[in-house]
Image 1: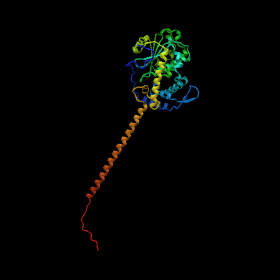
Image 2: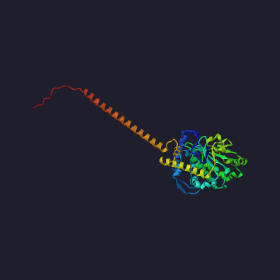
Image 3: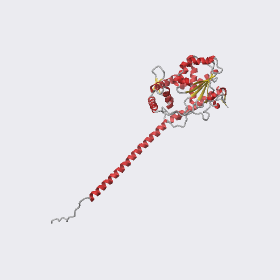
Image 4: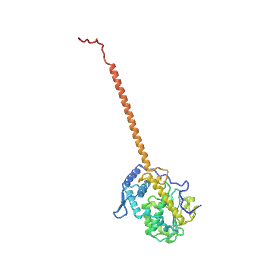
Length: 364
């Protein structure tokens, strides 16, 4: 099969495993984190400086239930560390301009298709190909902005219930100039590990030349153990991605030819449509911080707001039922008391010692 644009959904049967239920302690820490985040009315606009700004709707919508849980898991359920890291990411997103990059602004960086979102792996993770052989610009901050833009668009497309993505990095035909400077590599690592926790499902690196292997050894100390455990080297991609959604060049069945004039607007339009649908769902459900990502992404789960409303109605029904029961019990008790009083009166009358006497004569 052939395609010129991204796939809209995973192949049949490719879906994530159901998340584990929270323990009582984990639920308690989540509730505390949610309460803390709900109290945030404004945050700094930069890492340094005293200027603050109120939370925008987009930021409030970003603070989903799953987002908060990702930061708790990343900090091994340390509440204070989760609060600190989450706040730091919010400030970073503002300062870096994550939500401000447009397809037009980033376009020139991807003119040759050095990054491509195409297909989903066997657990429903959207796949982001990094193809350094198609590098077309010199190292700059805009290359980092390009990567962040593509991470955001890739996450826009993940199916309900899936939180991660798969990075497929193919170093085939990459010259020594295809590896980024150490400064950019460290910055990208810091962004991935600090501000996208629990998002990297796996990183599949293939066709590594010796100089890339040497480069990876240099940056190895900066890769945390959790991230390192998700990196796989030279494994057949067909083991991780269904053939129907994997490029022919990577061992799959998809004949994909990058055409910037077709692919770039197709990706931007698909991602924008998904974001618009999420915003509509979020607004319809009451614009809540801590909303369900499964609901926002169109899954078979009701909103947190709807769940709260149902719980409130149930509590009211239970309260009304209790009042009715108590009222019935009171009526029954009063009725029994009245019957008892009547019986006592009858019994009392029957037990009176009544004597028959002659009529009293009244003297004239």
